[in-house]
Image 1 (cartoon, helix red, strand yellow):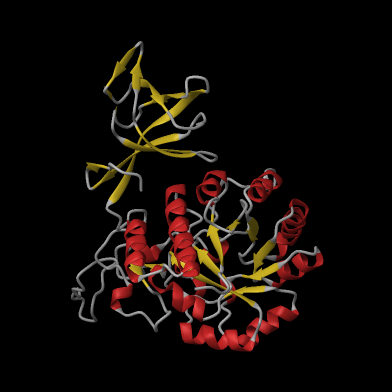
Image 2 (cartoon, rainbow, N blue to C red):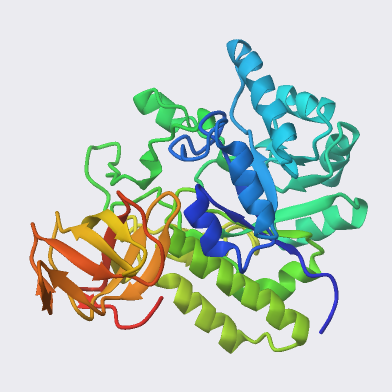
Amino acid sequence: MSGHIPELVAGVRNPAALSACSDHADAVYFSIDRFSLRSRARDITLDNLDAFVEQVKSSGLKAYLAVNTVIYPEELPAVDAVVEAAASAGVDAVIAWDPAVISRSVECGLKLHISTQANVSNWRTAEFYRKLGASRVILSRELTLEQIKDIRQHTDMELEVFVHGAMCQAISGRCYLSNYLLGRSGNCGECSQPCRWQWTLRGEDGAEVELGGKYLLSVRDLCMIEHVPELLDAGVDAFKIEGRLRDPGYTAVVSRCYREALDAYRDGSYSRERALQWKEQMAAVYNRGFSTGFYFGAPGPDGVAVEKDMNASPVRRQVVGVVQNYFYKQEAAEVRLLEDGLSVGDFIVIEGVSTYLEQQVESLRVGDSNVLKAEQGQEVGLAVVGKVRKNDRVFRVERFGEKAEEKL
């Protein structure tokens, strides 16, 4: 099977996440430490933007910068500085929806992708943004496949859609609940996610209504791996993976699965059986359970994870310690075990702003002795399969209390 294969766009928060998906994605989207709907993603700043974009380009990927919060009058000079820095760094496109960001991006000669925050839901709106200088629209997450097909038939604008990751209770993520309850605006990147809290529903008489769970507003994650052919038939130009705040392991697994699915569609080997295998692999990293969102109509009760906590994955990462030093010649790290012990055979992840390694523990050394197990509080020499850095964290990966025996 042949035909146009969409661009695969993965969300990343730092160089570690970039390296995790660089063999799978075609492009990454990210933000700096301001004007982003993910305000906690602060590893990329104006000071290191040039270096990060250079790293993206050297990995053979495109770089898309999200500047998609509400912009207030006093923020306009800072917005101009961010957009000008993006142009100087060679960013391939700015993701925006506020007209102030749109107009400044066009003035700076940048390509423009319209954020899902704009809630683009029909072809006339897409054409409106084309007249403003946009080359791509990231469609509303509330559209069905049939509605996307209608938009495709009436415009040749590039259409990008979300295929995987967190969904929001509010339309296109424009939510006021966090600001109302805590004074932290989701539209300015500071959402406290009250939709993920436990809630109780009571009737007019004060009696509690039993609904089989407490997470009454927590929407399941989007997963369209089983419907890649339908998405391609709809004529979309880019698949978007949400997850700028998730760990690099998530980014690696999800981007790899969608890359393999797209490649399989291209060569005719895509099948439902393979799609279910990819879905199972993605269920092993952070998720809230899966649904198909609005693609096949408004989701019903099965679109809400009322019975589960934030993470439905059977796999858990437990932090055990922190890297103190790295010895290049010995291919080893000095690790201080602050939270728990570590044993030969444990499956671990070492993660930092610029580090992401997955491996089994093959060798441990305490003082002058090789040991099979090191205890909490000890400093241990750990053989590592790649470069690590001071203050990188070491996690043990376990499945429901069982040590993971294979790479995720």
